[in-house]
Length: 286
Image (cartoon, rainbow, N blue to C red; front, side, top):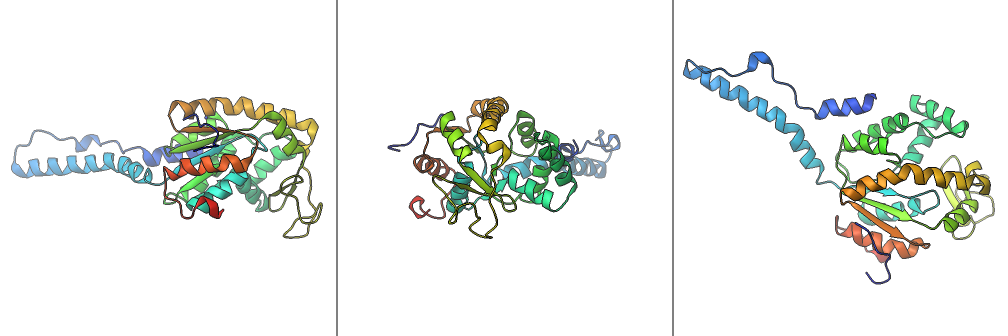
């Protein structure tokens, strides 16, 4: 597409999913023996058919699931993932599943996952892989019959391997934005903590400075969006995301886009998704 950046095509819950997908082992008493009578032969054939069906069932379920689009968007803080995900959801009817959103919901509801995550967040530490994975696999379990787009998960190789155990991804988009652009965006970003709404003073300012458009409540700047913390955040992302990007690139499902303007990247993202799923509205309608 003219003007597009060039695409270059990363534990209890895991055990639970593996158990569901693992075919049951045949019982020793069910092994077929050389029949002495015709009815024994029929019973042997019947038992063999049952065992074959049990083995084939998980494979059939996976094949059926593969008809639904499974997509992931990767990108550092400030890369515009949220904006791109909203447009993808609007244009293709995918469920936008944000790990950040689910974390906020769990913290607000005082769930077990939320309470554990809150302890790490309040200390300025990353939420551990097993906590994020447990939360996200639970959400995906409830959406086995839907097209979905993951945002913020998987963030690490451990999380990617956990996701592998339940599905095969069809499409992974990664956004490469220059460091200077990310730094400027993050330092100009303000949020409404209860809802997670994000504003940028340059290209998406609130109607009233410092106030959320919907509730009228005050906006805040997160500690890790302040200039002195941005460098650390971006280095952390680069370190954990590199093996994830490498993994999906090796599988041929990765599409990489570079630029500083989300509006210029979006047409190319739209084109890639259009090759996988029929749009529900035209790109121009967004």
